[in-house]
Image (cartoon, rainbow, N blue to C red; front, side, top):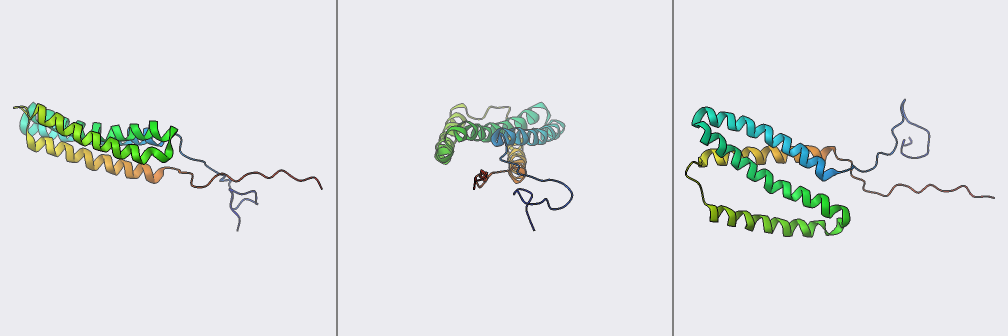
Length: 160
């Protein structure tokens, strides 16, 4: 049996060929995850508005948006750093994660919780965004075409 990726004869009726890596994985994941989390936040905010009014809806949206910003920064760092220094991307991810956690904690403690914030809806929006964001990322990674091996080099015919 031969592979359509090699120069052998084609298996089956159609040509498959070599696909190559996905173009912009991190930006595609950012768009997919943002869309999924935003859809969940709209539903969560509508439910919060029906049960607790505008403050509930804004609280749910604020919790989800905070999560989306937190995760979005990581994907943007992956996009920009991964292109120029793929081997150093993990170290930058770790440093960025530390800065994000400390930065968001400082912001939340300095600003504090406003009077209008519904803690229950803030948490619900955040959890909905986390679950949907992560599910979309897993789906996006499962559909990504990551090139593991270098493309085979074509050998020039030798003159005998």
